[in-house]
Structure formats: structure tokens, C-alpha cells
Image (cartoon, rainbow, N blue to C red; front, side):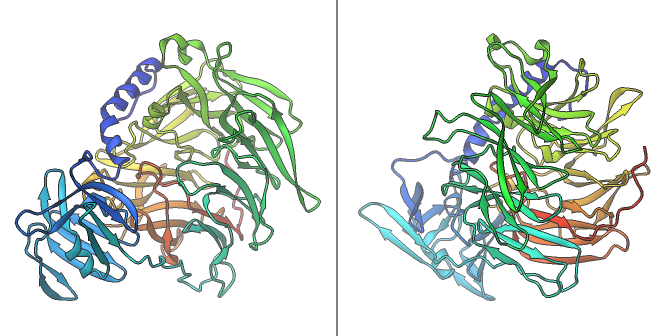
Length: 595
């Protein structure tokens, strides 16, 4: 759904509230092992490699075979499966099996075998014969009659390690994660392969410093991928000198590298067991071959999660959250800790606290290259509502009296991209948590001192991840056919937007740049070299696995650089934050930006 500018912000917030109510039941189901199936106290329990999956298994009355709902086995390590139009495919540790729902037989290694009881529909979806299926796939299944439990025990084989595919020397340095470990690759060195760094539980990569000499990343304290304290680390480009920059946990969205020096700004947060630890805004700098920390703000500050560097690297934009006395605001802070107010959200747009739902903070700050314009998301006092969408605003910091409301969007800063001349903002608009439907490319343009909105989307198509060529007015983004097929039972491992391609948009129009060879794959743009010559693309074969390709924009050649590359589709399973960070080593600087 695309919102047109000029509509009242309160109407927008009410719409987001309504969408949250409509999708609440569906996403409650997606967050649990059994899709749409309530727990049954009388059912049979299922354990996969010792982990409890659910208690909705049952005994087929005709054959006496233990039947396990498909949803309970999807999380089994190493298991790949797909059930589409009643055709089922399973793969585990190199063995593959195909069958049809309702069929009495299956095919393995080109031979036909008979089921005692095949896949069959049940009241919540599809169930599989646990023992017959998994023993055919080479693993064991045990029945515990006393406790009415089925134990599936599949030996876990480590996933294939990413390997360099091409020996072509390429001008980039690469960082990526595999099995929550950090890996580095110098692709500009002939014969160099991926190098594993001894850093467990890497939650996400922040990125490279401006000179490519240091990489920042967040390390998770516990084993839970969606909770727990995160700590900020840096490591040298050669994989040496790993160092934690602060003993306190950090706010995930705030670590940002300076654009001009080896310095990173970040915000600390409270540890779960130390409520007295106040938030602070910190700066870590590389000085005299050491990392030196200093606090820019500390002591009870009600900081928001917005944080962005101004282009000169001498100051940052920071946000303040709503309080009983103060409205959400944006300040500018220099490297000496001195602040000045740039913008306060008007009460008419912030809403009244007594109304129950109100704007709590301005998050996801995105400054234009000239530092004049600021894009941000208006986060309300409800994490659930914010997950469904937030109002996107653009502020002219030289004339901040009238912020421009673009419409409703998911709060991903990666989906906002300022043009090199700061005159256009490309953004992906549309609410609800489905990134695979209802999300379209919109251009906010500055004309004669006024903001105007152009919808560049296409009917039935979904867009994602826009970014600009650094020294030109060419825009790249991902586009594919809208799809909710991955929500269907048995299809959760499919790519979210099958056939998704990379598109480019110029003054002459939009066109696909790189054709996806298979309809079951999806391409996501990652980075463009500063000379505009190479485009790095992650091509997915599954929702969580693919390869890294480099596309030559001059001659159209495509080179596969890395295979078996894992990716992260996010908490809701349909959004792809970067698990790869690229630093372009040899960059030819073309002509300056046209003013």
C-alpha cells in the first residue's frame, strides 16, 4: 500500500494500527513452530535432535504409523524440503527423496519404494511418516511409548564452507559471516581464499572503516539469535588485532563509522542485569596505534536510536525520545560534546500522550550527502506497531519548520538512499511486515524548494534495497513479482521473491540490468564500486543460502566470486540485512558530481 503525501499523520498512524490488528494472528502463528496449529495436550510429542518441536504428532489409524506435521521438522539442521502443488522433495546429508502427497510410494536414487503410509493431509496441513521418511534419508527415529514421544536424531554435518570460485583478481576486500563466524577475503590477491577469524556468535557486520583498514561487527553474548546483549568489536583487515571497544552492550542500530577517519560512534545501553547503567553516546578513535574511547554524552540521557554522521565527519545528528515535558527532537553534536537543536517534532504531528499512541522518537536517521536534508522514521510507543510500518519524514535542516511526510514504510534505513547531488531520495514505501508484497520504489524530489513524490513502482511488482551510483544519477534496486507463496506450508525455505532481478533507473527510464537464470532464485544488490564498473550481487537459491556474483556494468559479464554464502532473512523471515560487507580497493574517481 502506497501513501500519498499530504495526508494527516494521525490517519497514517491509525492505518498502521489497523494493519497490526489484521496481521496479529498471522504473525503470532509465524513466530511459533506449528503454523496455524494450536498445541494439543493429547497429541504425541516430537523431538528433533533432542529439541522439543511440538506435540501435535499422531498415529495413523489404518497403518499404525506415527505421523508428524510438516511444520515440526522444518527446523531440523541440514534438512531441505519443498512441498508445492502436492509434489514433495526432501534432502538430508546428500540423500534426496521425492514423492506426492497421498501417494503410496516414493522415489530415491531413481528407484521406487513403497510407504507403509505416505504423506497425507491432516486438519492443519500435511503430515509425514516419521520413521519411513527419516530412515530413508539415512537417520534414525525412536518411539517412546511410555511418554508418547517421537525422537528424530539426524547427525548434523557442518554446512559447506564458502569457497572462492573465480581466480580472477578483483578490486575488493570482503567480510561475511558463516555459522556465526566472521570470515575475510582479499579478492585482489590471486589465489587468496576465505580466512576464518576466531570470533564466535557474530550477530551482524557493521562494515569497513573509510580506508578499509578496520572492520566493525557486533558480537552476541548469548546463544539466542534474537535477544541478548551485543558488544562492539573491531578487527584489522588482515584478520589480526580483534578488540572489543566497550565493556558495555551497545544499541544495535547506532554504531556508524566516520566518513573521514578511523573513528566509530555508537550508543551504549543497559545490561539486562544492571538497570543502573545509563545510556551514553561514545566515540572510539584510532590514535597512536591504539583505540581510544571518549564519551560525547553520558548520564541519564534519553537518547533515541537515531545516529548519523555529517559529511565532514566533524559532527553527528542524534535523536531524543519523547518525555513528559519534551517532544521528540534532533540535535547536532560535535566531537567535543557540544550540542545544538536542529529540529523538534511539532505537537500536532507527535500526538498527545493521553491519546495512548504517540510518536516516541525519530529513528533511522539518514542525512543527504550535503548534510542539508534528513530522512527519518517516526517511531511510536509500540514495538509491534513500528514493525508494521512507520511514517517517513524528510526535514530541510535549513528550514525545519515544516517537515514533509512521505507516507508509511518499514523502518529499514537500508531502504533509503539519497542521490549524490542530494536532490532526490529513493525509498521503499508500503506498510505491513511482508517485504515481499506491497512495497514499491518511490522517489522524493526537491523542485523549486518543495518536495514532490513520484511513484516508480509497477503493478504486481515489489521493490527493495535502492542505492545510487556514487558519481552519477543512476539508481539500482531489486524488483520482482509480488509473492506470498513462501508463507504456504512446505515452502518456507523458498526465496521470498522468486525471479527477483536487479534493475536500474535513469532519466531515460527503468530496465532490468541482470537477468536471474532460474525462476527459483532471487538477486539482491549489495554494493557498487566507486567507478561504477562492478556491481556486487547476492544470488539466493534458498531463503538463507546463495552465492556472491560480480556484474560488470560495462560489458555485461558476470563472475561468481563466492559460493555457499549464508544470509539472514531477518526476524520476520522476509527482509535481508547485510551479512556481507565490501570495501572497494581500487577505485577510479570519475568526474565530480554535477551541481
